[in-house]
Amino acid sequence: MLQRWQNMLEWLSIALILLLPLHQFYYHPGELPSAAILLYLLHSITVAASLQLKHHCPPVPTIQGFAWLEQFLLLALLITLLYYWYLPLAPFSAPAIQWLWLGCQLSSAGLILRLYLTLTRRNVTNTVNTNSPEPAQRWLVAYASQSGMALQLARRSAQQLQQAGFKVLLTELNQLSRQQLEQYQKALFIVSTYGEGEPPDNGQQFYRLAQQWQHNLQQLEYAVLALGDRSYRQFCAFGHWLQHWLHSRNATALQPLLELDSAQRDSNSLQQWQQLISGVSDSNAVLTEPDWLQLPLLSRYVANPGSTGLPCYVIKLALPAGQQWQAGDLIEVQPENSKCDVALWLTRQQLHGCQAVRYQGRHVPLCWALAELQLDKVQHPAADEPLDIWLSNQPRLPLRRYSIASTPDEGCLMLLVRQVQRPDGRLGIGSGWLTAWATEQQPVRLRLQAHHQFHLPDTHRPLIFIANGTGIAGIRALLAQRVKHGQRRNWLLFGERRQQSDFFFARDIQQWQQQGFISHCDLAFSQDQTEKRYVQHLLAEQQQRLLQWLAQGAAIYVCGSRQGMGQAVHQSLLAAVGEDGLNLLQQQGRYRRDLY
Image (cartoon, rainbow, N blue to C red; front, side, top):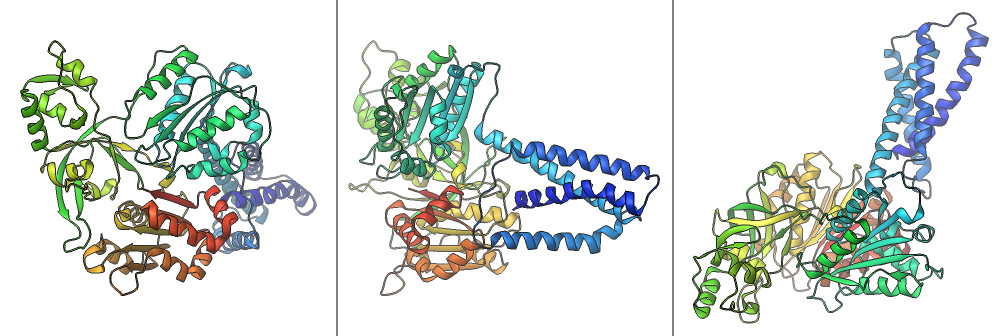
């Protein structure tokens, strides 16, 4: 909206610049005050600079219906208020100079807006100008990321190419047009697979459109790094589709497709990817990983005592020194085995757990290193094999990812973790470590992961939050951030088993609702009545309100289980706004999902 206002004000400013000399010549001939000349020049310069920057700003999205009239009337109301309440405060008595004084302030504010939008766009696209104009020196790095890992790898890959002197365009797959793809001769694609073989949200538009493109890409040399989760049957399916699509368009692969399990960050695939980039950039730099943190466990407690479901724990960790995160971000935890399992393995293998070893750049006792390994796959070291080398070749426990439920100013890093039980009754590695095996004040090894797809918008638009189960963790952080900024247009839909035992963060939610920060709070507790009700039922019942909020520019944030809730909510939204409407919401960044 601010960009549209700026466009309108620029036309008014141009009219003022052209008509003011004529007005002065016919109605007030004579010598002009020096203040009027200075203001006129300043106004002309700021308007010209703003018009020059306009081409470097993001395009203004097209609005439909009478939204343009609403924005025009709002601008007219603003100018009227300035005319009656602000213009009389001008330090000049002549009306023409008063208007120049006001125009200078508005045009200066507009110029600042243009500068901000230009810098923001450059940061988003990460386009770097170099002295080499040759097409062969231009690289395209495209990504499709759901939780942020593919984006991080894409940024680091692009940075390494830039440091080697190449011109690089870093862009999400949805922003990649057919014309852009035809302009590049070198390309890297880092793409995740979402759910059962689906593209991430910021790759779905490309997936739909690309299947209709029949053009030839024989000029393109490319490589694909596919990210996925081996717990799903369709491992890296979207990456395989992209590889096949590029091959069918006669593009040339620089190397075979690389598959990367998102829980195994130190795999051979990453090393091969690094070798590819080092080869083309003639650089020995490596892809740097985020810093590992050691945060003491401050406290934990059961959040759903008496629940018919598995126990959920609120876990509070110490604030990371010198580190910040945003609401919506995640952490990756390096889980550990229980001390009993490690001791049992050492006993069976007849090894001493107290002997010192070097592991992951740290000097630690052997038992500490074994705590991070998949013990059921670890083999006894050979008689003459150094323990340091032996440990480096053993499989590590996969990382576990959790939504952060707090904001940095709340004094701790808070999680909501549900225990997972295996068929034999044992606890899952990640949930068992955080909820049972780690002791109070024991350091938990983790690293922060930015989740740009789930950050709050920069504007004060209304937001609709939909969550079930432990998905309320990420939503709670978003709500806390909205409360901090005084943003009251929030609508929460939450579902769980029973209200008495499973209403997570009930005190916070009820307090924010009483304070007016949650306009509407719709709850669905499936076991509190004979006929089960879930959040998708609430959404269907509130379809009229949903459409009203969307017409006012609202964005939708969904967090929770993908199977069941995530799919059902998606179908409810399709029924409400249609496939084209939902696709448009995704393109505008107004439909964001964090599902697991």
